Every structure is written in C-alpha cells, then in structure tokens.
Image (cartoon, rainbow, N blue to C red):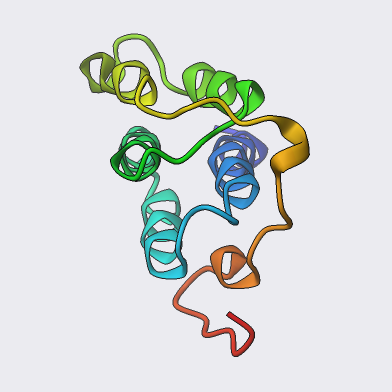
Length: 113
C-alpha cells in the first residue's frame, strides 16, 4: 500500500490529539501518541473519548464530529459515540492554546509544562 495512506491515517488522530492538547495531560498524551505509533487507531479513539468523558471535559462540536468520523461504526462496539455523550459542549472561543507537553511524542520531557 501507498506509504502516504498510512501517514494520512496516523495524521488524523495526531491532529485530534494536538487539538485536545490543552485538555489531556502530558502523560496520557504520550500514551496516546504511542498507540497511534503502533497503528492502534480504534484504541486511541476509545482512550481519548474515555479520558474526556471520565473528567467531563468539554469538547467542541467539531472535535466531537472528528472523533465520530474517525471511528468506524463497527469499531469499538459503539463505545466512542456513547462515551462522548458525557462530554459537555464547549464553545470554540473557550479554546486555549495547546500545552506543549501534550504535543511531544515519545516521552519527550518539556520543562515548560
């Protein structure tokens, strides 16, 4: 298969994770980066949704839509759509810049975080 296909496939969850960087702690973000690196895209979506729902973290309609689009209907037994119901809506103007630590994959330590 075309290597560009795999880069695009991995890039989508990375983009989602980067966008949620201000709401997902650095240690959790590093674990999610690892799941993406291993090609566990269904698992990473399930874990992102679970982390957000566990703490009732607000997400925008765009973020919710992106997660639902990336999660095929037959994946995860419908867990992701169900879990996302626990996340309150967030207005786009409430978004803060992403924390740098959440953006650094592979256990990179950021002294600013």
